[in-house]
Image (cartoon, rainbow, N blue to C red; front, side, top):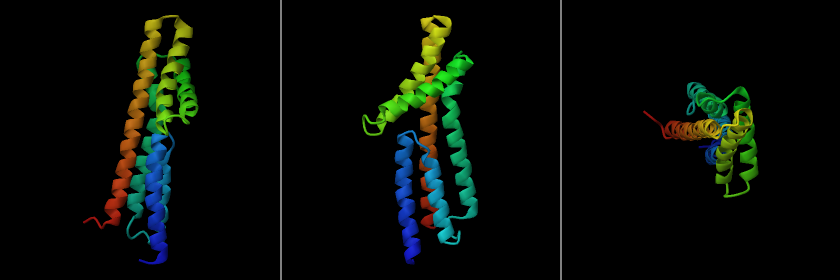
Length: 172
């Protein structure tokens, strides 16, 4: 291995860890892993991490990020929320993640995103309908959607890391 290949491997390993942490923090870690994988592929003339693998990683990252964006909205809508409640889910999740990020070293952003999505959907629905039960149901739907999104995105990142490692270790 030459120096550039070793450097690319170190960058890839750091990006894998960083991507995993980024997902825990509610950030787009999939793109970080994809970028480092592409760099490693380029520096090794795409003999280890191939164009086909990069395309697969791209599709996985795109689906994970898109699902992360819409899952809370879908959950709120599925449980009877209005368009305004869906917007409340999005804004609440974002504000909650930002507000709680400094707490609990990373887990604060996840809890904040969950709590914020619930509060955003709940608050808007309650203001619209003045029915506590309905507002709780819509808030719960937003929470379920966010949990599903984080779990799926985490699984996507672990899969991306596994595929990279498999390729580097010389999969049959």
